[in-house]
Length: 187
Image: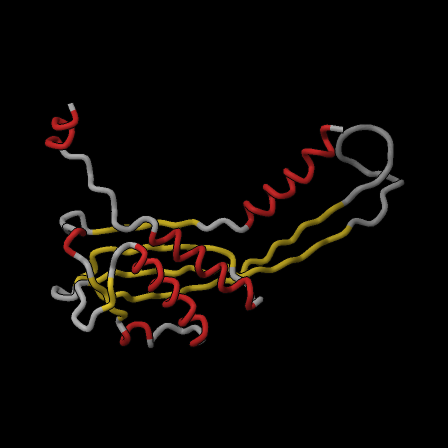
């Protein structure tokens, strides 16, 4: 009976693990990120991104919401310029399932084997890069990257984009590296 109760939980875990987002970030360690309070989108860079205007709008709205939630404000004279870049690739999975009845253990010929089945599925994996550029110096100071499975379903797109952007920007601002002075202050 316990097996039947655990089966739905196991299936939920398997489905959830398929939709995970992998995020990474990199940044200039010499930059003081507390100086940045305002942002604007870098139109010249965003116009070059080869995705639909609707998807661009989804991404930019999600970034706007996340940055404002972090206390940033939009400005005509920003501290940071926000640029995006995207990549996608098709993933194809082929699974074969063979089952039958027979005698003995191990590999070999099974006279009672019935035909196996092959399942082919495809999905699109997308990667979103968010670049934060110092507006005065015109230098990249922080870059976040998120990779996840995309969908063509309009209702799912909003949720997927919000999830990816939220997880990427959760890594901003970067944690200050531990210095000798900070370690000694804690003692």
